[in-house]
Image (cartoon, rainbow, N blue to C red):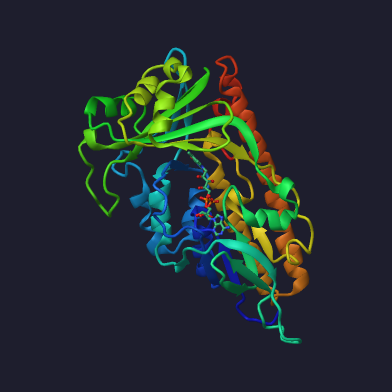
Length: 418
Ligand SMILES: Cc1cc2nc3c(=O)[nH]c(=O)nc-3n(C[C@H](O)[C@H](O)[C@H](O)COP(=O)(O)OP(=O)(O)OC[C@H]3O[C@@H](n4cnc5c(N)ncnc54)[C@H](O)[C@@H]3O)c2cc1C
């Protein structure tokens, strides 16, 4: 490869892809980013993510002007972030008593949608580009400056690139390419259903049942269902926007329980199902009440959680000789316990950029590329497999009050899983 500045194509403009695009640009790489969705607001779904052990790495990957806008994404930026606010309490799902609070110093809970919109700033994202295939580009003989790969999209367009980073989420198409076996690359259903709801109670007393449980977010465990609640938005998300009256805060609740679902259920059908379910009713107050009070028309989804334990890639042909790899949920989709998924995605992005910098420093030498990208892949396979496995083990302990104390969350808090 003689090109002085090879193009990196990122597939997926979720949090991982957007962060990778900023980090690569900041390090002087030529980046193109594609997403299959029509635009950034194509889906109304939102959820909260707690940024904790990888937050400093994420800040360092961003240009200063984007990093400065991170407070816009924080669910309640006006909170006084003391030790209590920077912790995650877990209540007994039968009695409602506090079992433990996991300390998370320096952590901030953000809205995924708002963080995505902050991270989209300054990037030229190509929407409506659903990747179909990656093939070796045909180059005129002897022209080694021609990009090595061709990406084909569902709209019939093609793009050339030298490297591809698959940040295309839990159902990654790029994973199928590098593993080169559709069955092996398919995520495993966990046997656990997961419901999320975005709620505007319009009633200060109801919102206070959320904030009295914890000013940021909390969970209840140890019975047939895991419940959770927290604050999603207190303002409109613009710079310095004042908090609305507490009655108008947007909150969320989540519920996890055992079951299978072939297809996601959403909207009023999901709300009715959750309100009528025995395991919702059995959850300790106020977690059961927060479900019961859900106003008609709230955003609600139920889906089965899936995971994939990373395995080594299929070899040089599948990875286009160490030019195609993965990051984020595409590489290690895990269950949400202990909030590790995006922390590992940030770590992936940081490591990938370091690997590409090393290849560039070696003047794009092919052996160095194989060594550096190969080492990146191997490290994420090992770290990701451990994190995914731990997330499933953690889930298995969360429905029995006698076992909750054995959870890593209870014993070791929200520290790095791998
Ligand atoms: C309820 C919930 C709570 C969570 N809490 C935490 C937490 O507290 N802490 C934490 O660290 N993590 C948490 N996570 C995990 C975290 O949300 C994910 O790890 C992270 O958002 C993954 O981002 P991603 O960009 O890798 O994938 P995604 O967000 O799935 O983005 C993938 C993108 O790729 C695009 N795409 C897919 N296929 C194609 C294609 N063929 N062509 C082009 N584009 C494509 C999609 O449109 C999408 O925009 C939580 C997850 C959930 C669901």
